[in-house]
Image 1 (cartoon, rainbow, N blue to C red):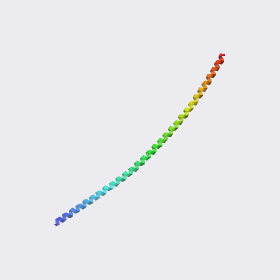
Image 2: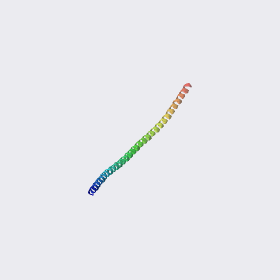
Image 3: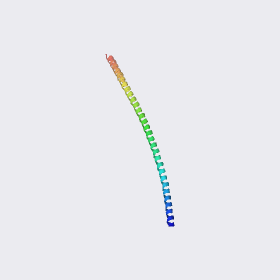
Image 4: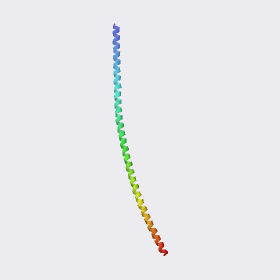
Length: 110
């Protein structure tokens, strides 16, 4: 009976030691899980901030491109108008010269 009592005590002590070790391992795993969750949360925040920064940068680039395009379009329109005016002026001057030459030719012929 004494041997049985000692065996029972030894078994209970081993069981308590195993349960204690399991609790320690469980606490360690739980702490690692919390650390991972915290890391994931920080990464989510960082990724969101990076996406927002990239979107803001992309929007700024698009606005700059749009502004440059509008400016270039305005320059092209202005230059086209200037070319039309110059062409009309040149045609008018060419016409005046032609009329003057014809008049001079007619005057010389008479």
